[in-house]
Length: 59
Image 1: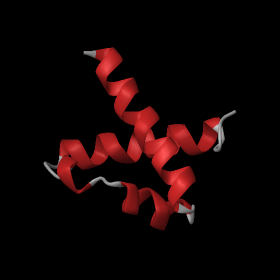
Image 2: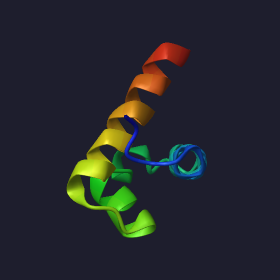
Image 3: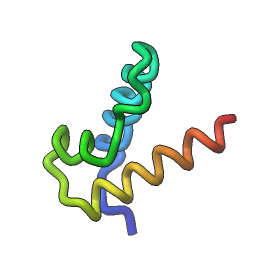
């Protein structure tokens, strides 16, 4: 079961892309997700892991 909505995922996907475009990809962390979406550690980690696996599938 997903712990976040598709809207949250797409929002963080865009934010992650923005971070990478300005050369700050390494700054996009679980903590960034927690602060932006006011998520707890577990939900933020699940979303972060899915974002990372999504990126790996694209390459």
